[in-house]
Image (cartoon, rainbow, N blue to C red; front, top):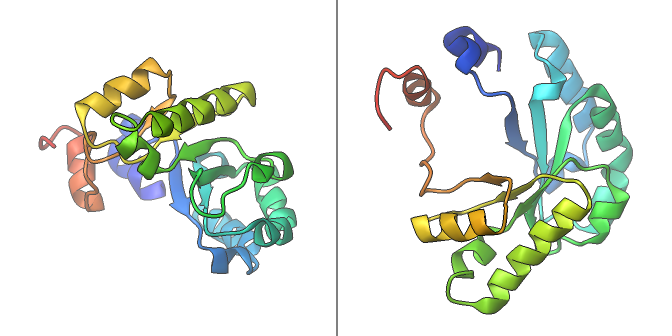
Length: 180
């Protein structure tokens, strides 16, 4: 984040999301994150940890005190891949998360499978009901993007919007030196 602030100034992203593995959740991740934030001077409010769908309720429950400590420091927590694997609605009532991301499998099927569209709508409505921002993952087409806009999804990510880029290239895009 510090490097992006230096290179991009006011064009630097407001937040940076980092995926956390289930194995990392079992460690003193709170201490590590705090050390990095302190050592770099980065603003904890700009860091968002994406909690993995592979982490079962027991793993997240055991990690809850460490995650709560990070949340009190200002680090954001989001449930990643909501609706897939072992992700449970119980996570929403046991963890103080600040958002959820709808699994890409539902997004990819929502145009031709009414059940997938219903799940996407349900998760979007659930997020709104809990006052949590919702991100749709895996948007691969303009039609998917338009369908998600109709459902008032807050945020979107996927190859339709942009492919992963090396940091140097992304920085050049953001300052307008090259086109995506």
